[in-house]
Length: 465
Image (tube, rainbow, N blue to C red; front, top):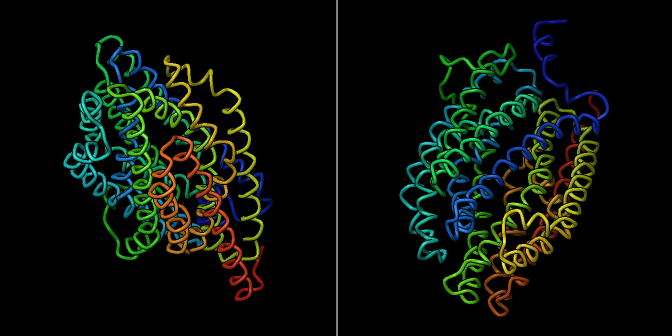
């Protein structure tokens, strides 16, 4: 065996043999990683509820869309990094792989610092614009000030994880993020229960644990003997890699930002409904925040297949194995539908006991249940949308993926909130916008993927299996 093949053999071979088993082998550690991380994030909200500070859960919940919007201004480039590294591996190009790895990490550092500066400067005005007021506003602003200090660590961590996934390694992030997530929970308990802090304690614990994740992942990649090894002296921006990361990542940035903006509009509608029904209270805000946290378990499990779809299609595209694309697409959709149905039905069945872990107000628990019923009953539509987006992006059609997502989901959702939900301002009318937009977008992604696959096969009818 040649040196290059020996090195590659250390990573998972995604290009040969049956696919479904390899997809699940790739997805399951990634899914477990995301679920454990999500469990720790949920613990943040449960523990902050132990602080006896009214509205603490809802305050953190109201920051989610705004924080994600700012992070997505830069974090979408991690998707571009994953595509470039995976494609270089598929091309069997060691130099290009190394250049993509080190360029990615420099971009991660720069983007994290930029997100920190932007977040600290605009968080309070945006929270006010969304409708936060009184003690909810003060708690939310305190949380974001501390949270954004740790954003550079989050940025670099995400780029490191994207590199591990691009080379087929989802187990290393699983181990490291499990350990640092446990650290996060222990610090939460220390700051909130022992030191009597509230949202500030949760934000500080998150910052410290993200720093630990970044350091641990970087050290492991530094010791790696494969093509993706991190060598600190090579940290520089290489023109070709930068161009590819920006080309593949910028559409993901636009898509992520506009998705977050549409969610901010929905969040504003929910805050408005709460302020009308519970003046001075936060039952609907708290219920929505708890529902988001519970629903996110289904989302991160399903989205794991989307990330697998990007890696599998990118490697096959780079290796020019176009005759296997049909199998890649079929098996990615099959895996995502299976996971989405198992997760969504399980949560729906347990929605009231799960809501009571976060909440004690009957009105808040009811608001949580309303959200979960509307978003999870047809969750296979989100699975279709996310997996289709990942496939189209991996097929080197990042711009098309973004256009479809924006028109089919974001624009439609914003129009719905501005028309139907404004005419009938109820939680039911707000939440139903999710499955409608997911379904339409998912169908459009599937059609695009089929058209692109057919075109590739007509241009390259024969290649090696």
